[in-house]
Length: 120
Image 1 (tube, helix red, strand yellow):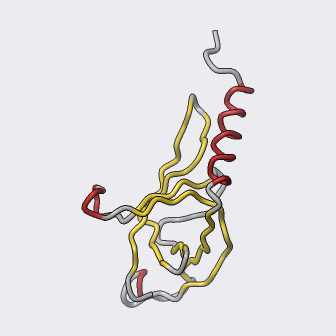
Image 2 (tube, rainbow, N blue to C red):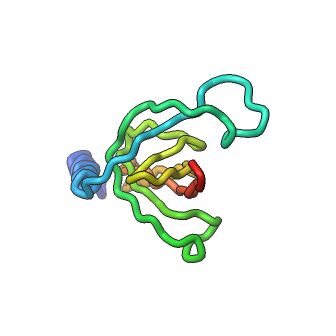
Image 3 (tube, rainbow, N blue to C red):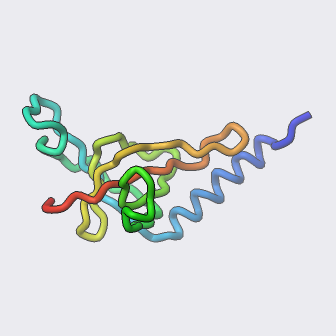
């Protein structure tokens, strides 16, 4: 007996996709350039790799655990990696963590924890 059909799973993915796109938000992804880093990833040179749609909720850090400044919901196939930078409306964030969200075995979207970078 199947609790959720393949078409229902596909519909869930499509519905979450529509919600993320309806938010109307985008971010520029920048990724560290390969090479030697003397002072860690924040001292690295970053290069733009693309623009992605997302739904972002900046939140004061005292209201979130693990000292993050916001969360973003991305499409399941978004090419984002930990330590990437997301630039939204002139504000730069570092991707702290990425967690795929699953619904009955299918990834509907990714939830990304963000840390705001000051002085970037």
